[in-house]
Length: 295
Image (tube, rainbow, N blue to C red; front, side):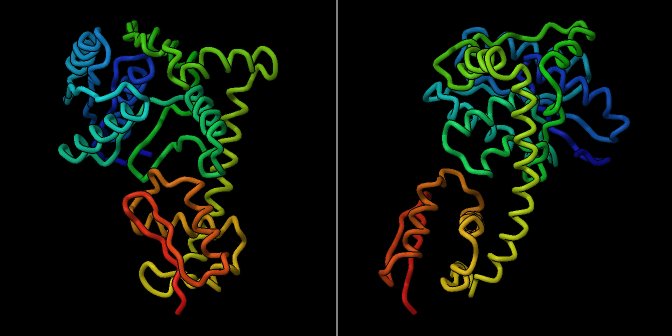
């Protein structure tokens, strides 16, 4: 996850999760042979956010670590906009300081919430993997198998007083409703170990998705006749599950990501490929056009 000589950018909000992450990595930095740099983003959404910034800067000073702080003003208070701004900030800082890894403080309960959120949205096997311990070779989540109880016990042992984010109790956010209302109900009425069970589901889907991606990558290479063009007959020889992954790989090749690329887009492309008309088009995100043409 972390190699000797790497610079690790640690995302620190001041809450218990990110504090546990920071102090864990700081305790291990000599053993790992890495350098740490703290990043803190003030979204400008809470009245006491400035106190969090001050606290994080004090932690950086106590640990003799460099810190980059930025304050922004979001156009909306949505989870999506805050997440997008946060990741943009982390990418920018990592590029500025030459960090090869970005450490995030997500833990076991966060993973359970993520799996449920994606299940509600109708995600497939890729989405139900939840969050990966290592994503894109850069984003790492060292605490993903640690529970909130373990994290709080660790911060207590260090006599830390984490910042409290009152927005975590705001039920207008889906993740909060899942954490505050749904998961306690599931634990009481269905499975007291529901969070661990959901984490196992994520691990199973991660392994199976890795295997499917290996098959799909080979299939994608055999279907390509040249850049951006797929052979329809070769494509149709593959199982529908592999076909969907081939199309995702095609989107990644074109756009570098699959952001805003959903099930409905895949199905529209599949319908066009399977249809009787020899020509047609599907409009996709980022002004991309998928077309079928008779040759």
